[in-house]
Length: 430
Ligand code: UDX
Ligand code: UDX
Image 1 (spheres, rainbow, N blue to C red):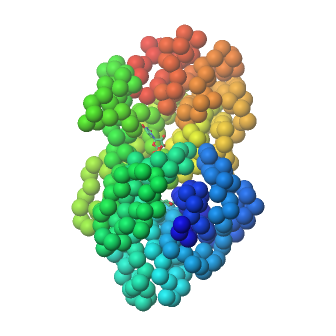
Image 2 (image 1 turned 90 degrees about the vertical axis):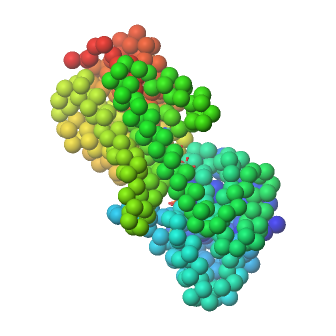
Image 3 (image 1 turned 60 degrees about the vertical axis):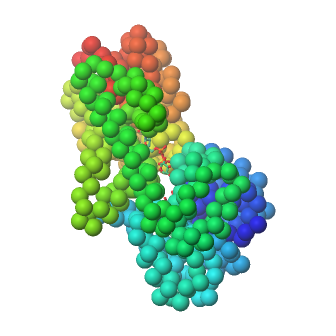
């Protein structure tokens, strides 16, 4: 069994550390936030991630937390870097937290450094040069990107579609690959730059699929087709597959927007205009705003109207609000002079949306409103189209930004219903 240090106790660092401890390794997770280490040491889990608390508890005798880098590295065979790499204004990722870890490595460290944070291709070369410049030539550097989706991260770690391990020397791949052996997954053995690119390109391609189906949805609205059936028909072709073809009001989260921008910026920095990704980003921004147009179509001027925004997290199963479409939609509505009520089962956006009223229940949120918008497809919203909700609303208009509901059932109950890329209502509320 190995002794593993993990830098960064966020979504990726905590899930990675806890799962490796669950596989029998001795793991010490380091974070710079004292309150985060305090909470974890006290047995509390600071993020909403299904199944993680159980894994942490089950592996607690092999899992510890520290603020001190040297303490984390003591006797370590591997040091995984999973610190935040948030976007900067230019779209380039902020790698300062990564460099901090490199600088904190004690002289004469002999650990294998494993990059899990998403970094642009070419970063590994820079890290290698920095290590050599510090006389840390014995430190082996390996790229091992993560593909964990929030809400299913523990399962994604334990049952990966593939594990990617990139190194400067082929023999450096094996010790890291061996850590994943018990999972029985395909191991992609490659060089550092290709491993870095696999991660960015995977997220960029998934985002492209989403923007593509969202554009198809817009055309469906013009020609009276149903995007749900269209996606189904497309997805049966094994060359295309059914995944990530759910039309909606745009993708968000800590990864897709950031990684698409990072890849576009990376190409731009080298003089190549990545047109496709420019379009993916533009389509995604427009998709969030189409909701406002749809509301205007049914309600006219939104000034003074009361709108319920249902779901704030960037997707169900998480409390994460990073790049959540809900933030743009709520802010747009406020800018139009509408009064906004919001509801989410776990995400707390009070610090991000000061002009919005937050409701403890769906029914409270829709009471006396002129329309309700489904922004996150929480299961609690699956039966939103009820007589109780219809009677509580001022005008029973539902804009279903995630195609969660059955249009005919909603209309049969007297709602004016509009989805994304679904055959439109024959009537409007006005
Ligand atoms: C992070 C990266 O942001 C992402 O690019 C990568 O794909 C996966 O890892 P995530 O785990 O979601 O994503 O980030 P976050 O939840 O923000 O956690 C990062 C943690 O690193 C935070 O707890 C933060 O306190 C910690 N951190 C940050 C350090 O320990 N040291 C630092 O210098 C900076
Ligand atoms: C993503 C990747 O899935 C994961 O492999 C990577 O490691 C990190 O980034 P995550 O950001 O947690 O994971 O969420 P994901 O489930 O991929 O959804 C991202 C966004 O796309 C969400 O806003 C979601 O609502 C949206 N989405 C997803 C769609 O609009 N349509 C789809 O068909 C799928």
